[in-house]
Image (cartoon, rainbow, N blue to C red):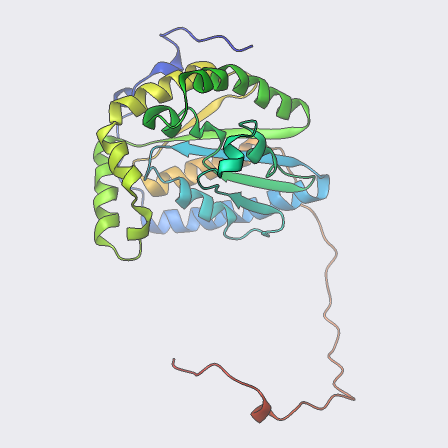
Amino acid sequence: MAHKKNKNSKSSAKHDDLPKKKEKIDKKFYEKELVNLQIELVKLHEWIKAKGLKVVVLFEGRDAAGKGGVIKRIQQRLNPRVCRVVALGIPTEKEKTQWYFQRYVAHLPAAGELVLFDRSWYNRAGVERVMGFCTDDEYREFLRSCPRFEEMLIHSGIILIKYWFSVSDEEQEKRFKARLSDPKTHWKFSPMDIESRSKWVEYSKAKDEMFAYTDTKISPWYVVIADDKQRARLNCIHHLLSMIPYKEIKYKKIKLPPIIKEGYIRPPITEQTFVPEVY
């Protein structure tokens, strides 16, 4: 059973204690470095597939912290049959009666798969705790059983990596305002985001207590400084690549055979319905 950590432990640090902000990263450098990292991600996911590894990566943090952005960049060049994203909605009435971890277990990877959880079972220690969606007993049971659950996953052969995206209240407010004024991202803003702003301190306390119980030696949290989205993406992907030893899979060179068109007569194109060429 995991024991609550000392108040002076690293996990109890507040957001105000985070390193001083750096200048915005150069856009050209970011784009070039992102491509290089995505090439390495392709090698990693091919290695995961070839070696039958089972990898789970959790992405947690405040609303608008940048979790979705880094997940999108990780998955962008990968085979969706190997790398898939799990972003569960509100539990159904049936799921509410199940063992809490049950609906997450259904999405765990088989051999040769990488699963990215866009929020995870830690909902219970965050939004459910702060917004009163679970009872005190359910919350305490989660803190008690979560480290055991994760230890069980790891002992079963799953590689479990947990990221917490840390964003300041000033930067979060800036991103919320940008979402509200942009029709492409307005859908990202929910009534729950408004609640999260008014309960900033409660969320901070919930995060600190969550870390105290679940930032364990066997399953530690890795905090990503996320006020600079681009820097956060590069740092997170670079760290992820360092967590799983991998080698490039060498494949035989493929020579394309010629197309043999003998014996084929194409039907008249007038019998087909085409999309209008508006552009």
